[in-house]
Amino acid sequence: MSATSQQLSLSLAVADQPEILGAGAALLRGFAAPVMTDLLESLQGLEAVSAFRHLVTPGGFTMSVAVSSCGALGWMSDRSGYRYVSHDPDTGRPWPAMPAVFQRLATAAAAQAGFTDFEPDACLINRYVPGARMTLHQDRNERDFSQPIVSVSLGMSATFLFGGMERGGKTTRLPLHHGDVMVWGGPDRLRYHGVLPLKDSPHPLLGRQRINLTFRKAG
Ligand code: SIN
Ligand code: FE2
Image (cartoon, rainbow, N blue to C red; front, side):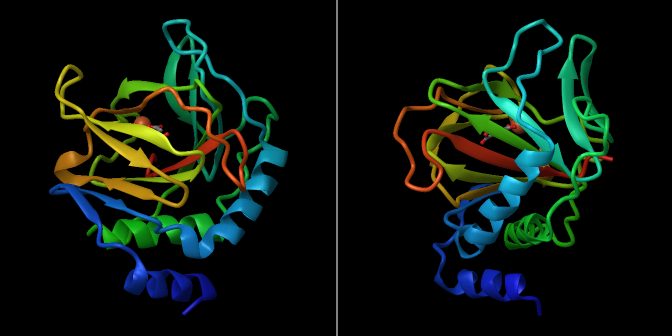
């Protein structure tokens, strides 16, 4: 057993019970805490290779959230649409490889929520500063909806909106804190979700930002 999986399975004994949000959706409070040092160190390395940038939506709006990616595929948006690409358009090079600690954390979190053998090939890295938000949307640019979404929160706390299958439906507000991991898949895979404008309450490790890692099987 690797050091990371040992740390992760150890954490299962002490972590809170998952908050069940649907047949295929769970919030794992503090699940990333045992690998935090590794995670933040790897994140720094990634930022240095493929920097955060603000993308434009197909409708012509510049997103308030800045993004980067790692893994075989990276999520992209521009005037011609949303899609996954194998190269970072800013560097002309492949996206940086997904760090082993990222991969193991995502696989372990998915398993904890009931999805075994999740092997993400894409990790979208979102950076929020105070005021940045993510409007309600579905994650539907991936080929295979049988695989879940695993979403890791780092830094400043945010309010996550978790809705239903339709944009106008009722939403649940969930506070997400440093180290929390959300998983949604199966019957909940296409639920609308978003993030309210980030409040300004600096985090001891990450300062005035929130980082979100969204793991997907895209290809
Ligand atoms: C996303 O849906 O891509 C981001 C969700 C989050 O920041 O928690
Ligand atoms: Fe999303």
